Length: 264
Length: 229
Image (cartoon, rainbow over the protein chains, first blue to last red):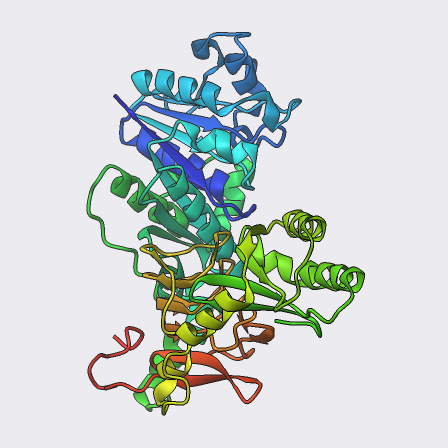
């Protein structure tokens, strides 16, 4: 029996889709059989980030409304043969699916796959209700901005109300240099408010933009810092105890010189 | 909370709506409506009793008043007679005139209490006729509305309205008092724009028609701030 994990955030643009793609790919790279499900009906993105857009024949709504079988709709990834994508429909909206249908779908996916990663849409309306309906665990993604943290807090409350307890937190797009200067919320500020367990810290990294545009998840890029962060998150999902990445900014020559002179 | 001829008071037996018996019935109805338009959001679902001193309203008039209360989401539990009320007043202030010390003695010391054993996250709202104790944090975006005191055994960062039915003796106490907005009866204040440093548990109350915040007097060396560890 596999596990169904929903990736959610409340606020849009914090990196749910990027996180889903990277976690899914990371788990597949470790040899697990993984399904990625895009529940953002009408605004689908996960297929683009995975570079699989041109292979879509059937989608989530086709499966839930019985137009096709689940197996027909799953698109095999181009890199890993044990990774599959169930894309969202683009021409419908969130009301095309209901939570009961999602529960049934997740039950079916759980039989077949070790991990099912559900990419949740932004917001707290039906799309969110659908996405969390069949999940066993939740990962909440936030960025170090007050607005994103506020929405994450609301989402955690709603998850708890739906009995998805102990969600794990990923803080995305952190800029260690800005945190050091006091211009960005630091990790302890965020944990202080949200009071949930931290699952990962992903630094802000240009390689994410590049890999997203190329349709190749950064987790495959050994040189990418964000990719390294996602590899560690992947291992934590499997239950390993992995240390957090050291995000300290290299001091550079001038910094070392100043330290020597006791200037800071 | 009151107008010239209508007042709402919290007693040990619950909320009582006072009418001025000298006022013409039609004017009274207008004033009640005006009053409830403002007060109803805090009172929604509350059970009240009415009291018009020695004035004996006819059955028809009482029906009209009950219908108005219902229209604003209030439930009429009955009418107090002059005799009932005199007894209630006496019970309410058994030690009136005795010397008062410390803010707990000045405030509301008895009444219903709701205990919430979890953190209140954004979007969560509690309104209760009585005191509310939160054993956890109240995060920004959450709100508590109570007709009595509010006590938070954690960080209060959301909105708190104590004495929401108009009781100016209500208090708001928190281990870390940093609310988005704080209201006691009809007084409203907000957090300062600059960041608040933790100074230990604090209590907000109304003193001389102003909302003031005081540090709780206790042995401050007993515990360390969780923020310095």
